[in-house]
Length: 210
Length: 222
Ligand SMILES: Nc1nc2c(ncn2[C@@H]2O[C@H](COP(=O)(O)OP(=O)(O)O)[C@@H](O)[C@H]2O)c(=O)[nH]1
Ligand SMILES: [Mg+2]
Image 1: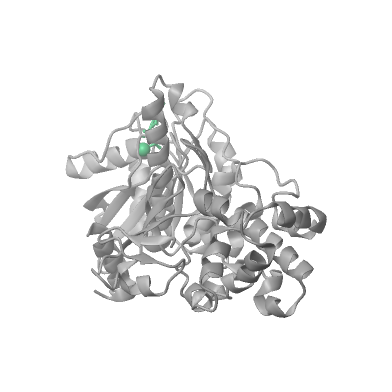
Image 2: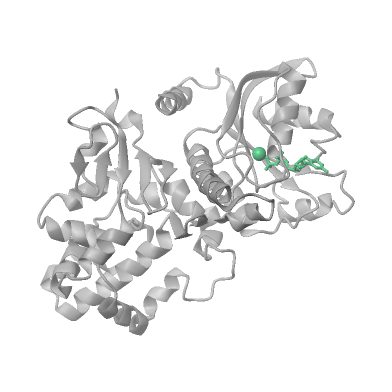
C-alpha cells in the first residue's frame, strides 16, 4: 500500500544522495495558511491545486502531496515534492467545530480525523521529509508550545527549514514578532492568499531546498 | 490480548514480537490495539501482588538512542501537553511526590500492560519491548526517563511496598508519555513528542481508545 511504498522510497532516498527531488513538508499550526500556500505553489508551477482551504480549523486532515514540482529561479531549476500537512496542535476539541455551525456528530468525527492527521503529520516529519516550510500566521502570537516544540524537533533532525510569516496583508501582522521568536532561522514574509512576495518565496525555496 | 490483525483476526499478546514480522497467519501488517478502559476495569479484581509483579516485568530498556527526545526540543516536551505552564504535577519531576504516587498505587487499578503480563508470566514480554514496537496507548519507553527505578532492578526480589511504589511511578510515567489521550469522544490531547518518537503509525483512532496501527513495512522487508 501507499504507506509502505512511501517508507521504502524514503529509505532508498537516503542512499541515492540528492539525485531524487526532495520532499518538502509544509508544517505549522492550524489555519496558518499552509494549504493556501501549497495550492499557490502547485498552481504557479503545475496548474493544479493540492486541496481545499478553509477558515475552519483542521480542514486538512490527511497529508496531501503534490509531486515533482519544478521551480525555476535565476536560471537554476529545482524539483520538489510538497506535502501539505494537517495543522499540528496539542489539543483537538469538537466544540471548536460546533462554533462553526457543525452538527455534533460531524464535529466529533472531524475532531477524530484531525487528531489522526496530527499523528500522521508527526510521523511523516520523522520518516519522510527532507526539508520543512514552517508557516505561521503573522497576526498571531508565534510564542506557542506547538511552535517551539515543532521547530525544536525540526532542528534536532537537522532538516533545512524556512519560516514563512504568512498573512502580511492583515492589519495586525507583525513580521518582527516572528523574526524575534525564531532568530536562528530565515523568515520570509508573504501573503499566500494575495500572492504577495512570492518571488522571494520561490527564490528561498530554490536556495534552501535545491 | 491487546493486538489483533485487522486482516484475519489473529490476536497477539501485548507487545508481541511476532507481529513485527507480519501476521504469521495471513502476512497482514495492520494491527488493532485494544487498550485501557475494559482491561482496567477487569483488572480491578486482580490482587495487588499479581499486578505489581507484572509491572516489574513489563518493560525492558529500549535502545536509548532511538527513544531519547531530541535535545533541542527537550524543554518544551517536558511541559504539560495542554499548553499550561508546568506545575510540578505534570512534569517528570512529579515522580518525586511519593506520597501521592503511593496513594495512587493502592487505589488505582492495574494498567492493561500489567494485566497482559500477569496473564502470561514469564513470557517474552521483556524481549518484546526491545523492538520498540510497544504499541499500547499508555505505554512509555522506560529509557526515555533515565531516573526510572525499574530499569535496572529486579523488582521480584524486593518487598511489596517497593513493588507498589514502582508500579505507581511507572503508571505515572506511562500517563505522561501517552501519545493520544481521549478525554471524551471528540476531545483529544496529543503528546507531540511521543507521537514523533513512535516507530509505528496510527492510522485510525476509535472512541473506545483503540488504535489501528501500521507496523513499518521495512521491518519485514516484504
Ligand atoms: N488574510 C489572509 N488570509 C489567508 C492567507 N493565507 C490563508 N488565509 C486564510 O486563512 C484560512 C486558513 O487557510 P488554510 O490554507 O486552510 O490554512 P491551513 O489550516 O494552515 O491549511 C483561510 O480562510 C484562508 O483563506 C493570507 O495570506 N492572508
Ligand atoms: Mg490545510
